[in-house]
Image (tube, rainbow, N blue to C red; front, side, top):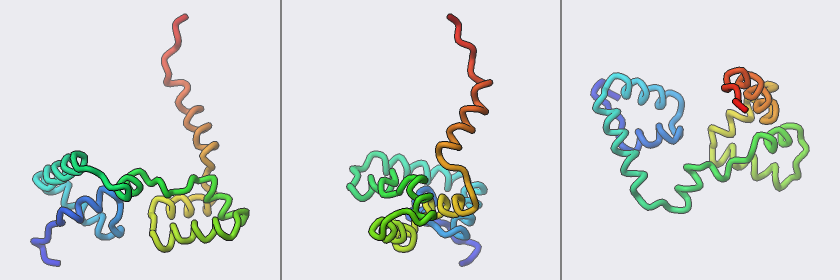
Length: 135
């Protein structure tokens, strides 16, 4: 690609959806930082996307409805899911290529905290910041 390369509208939207590979994603991010008009274009694209009618597939992709929860990924890593569930999960990672779920699997594989542990940690670190209730 030449120095005059600019990301296409499709690449900008793919960047927002985290559907670009890491190298392309970093390149788009650099271009957005260095070129304010490109950031304005991205804002226009997002506004247009919000106005457009959504297909069922777009709703599923945008809200990651097919993404299993961390607890299921942990069960998968522990080998405590059935064959059918394991096949679905493998397909979600390998065929769909879901980066969000791959990040969860990688984190859990390194001994990452469960969602319950994360909730407890957030609560315990936030409690001191909450204003005192006046009764």
